[in-house]
Length: 330
Image (tube, rainbow, N blue to C red; front, side, top):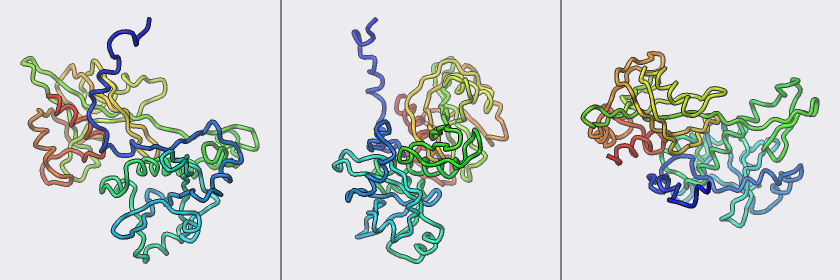
């Protein structure tokens, strides 16, 4: 059977809302991992058009010039600023910049201390860079990639099979164990994030939003949770909603995803059909959960983040994308 012979099987995908404001979701680099070898890193570092992202934990270094911010530095400047070049990794090449190499390297603690008094530079949180819209979306995606990879290398310096020290391979896309020949690849942790939707007997739809225990303001958001081994996406959505709110779920519809580099999650955004409406929250996760009409959510959408009245997350997050999609569909 040819699934492409009839109507457009991608028709619904073509009608999805814009992803322009979705954080970390835009990364145009060509990683080309399958063609890397032991010489790839040295070759890329030597290219004059190579540029580096400089990171320190959850922060990225920005240079301020003429009121504009830049996060890309040449090799000479990166070294002068205190980049730890023994830990450099290749992210990929930029097809829109004549395939110029893009690399990432951590800054030393001493470098961060020295930069604190340099007004030409600012060390900004990766999350804040996105929320403040300080860099182009494609660069923010590359920085998310850099943050996740650099963190993985720090946390996987020893072989999980034999305990020996591992070494960087494929310009940072892998770590190898010289002792037992095991190979280790970076991990990505899948997380389901979903908007449960209930339709009552009169046909009125409401969505389920919760106030999470970690929120400092009256912000209401979607429910979310990590997938477990051997679990389908649909099963994870049903389990997480049931655990956090006691709401039973029927149909599940996957919509889109968002990389979340804290440290290396992939948020899988879904709508979920609520088959029940009586909420009983898990108080270790939520302080409150409620059903909201579209009009109530519209009022919340009009309020800024941090408002004293109930509001939703900013456009940067997939949670906001899911909520706004539902509101606009009504």
